[in-house]
Length: 112
Length: 116
Image (spheres, each protein chain N blue to C red):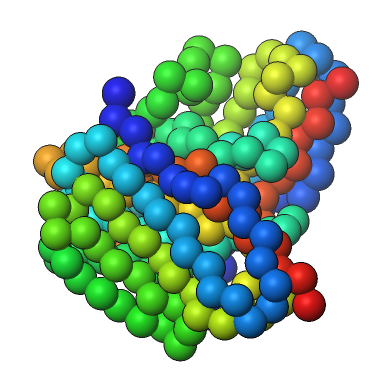
């Protein structure tokens, strides 16, 4: 079945360092969403990417959607302790637009 | 800001018992979902619900699971005969109907189900 692979599974950084998580799909996606889950919390929607090659920014966060619409990345510049949590990508397969296929998530720990 | 609410926050039950998890989706949303997350693991899709019927379900959502929208506001997940492996955090989510293919999911705070 379709899979969305997300790497790395865990990342430990010093505050101020950059962080990137990557999401790769075995099939072309119609769109991809990113969510953040704080420890003990629920997933919270961050952003959606729809267009091939799309890049969106939210302050220190930069989201990219690959040209082939099979991969995506989230980059955080100069991490802060408030960035701690698990970042999930979730993609909708092209032609099947209801069920989101979730990645396993990348857990980010930030040392102050 | 409107939010999805779930009750109870924590449910402890004995193996074999029935449980009902309750959710109140955001009022103008028409698509509803149940997800579960075993501690520290991935978010697993269970079922989506639209127009008073299941629109999609996963292989996890077998005959022991059912969903219902008993009135205009509540959306429930029933597990008929709980197993130890059903212990997890269960998240309800909802999304707008308009532009549903691009709508973000709004999650509730979850119900932690512990089966003993």
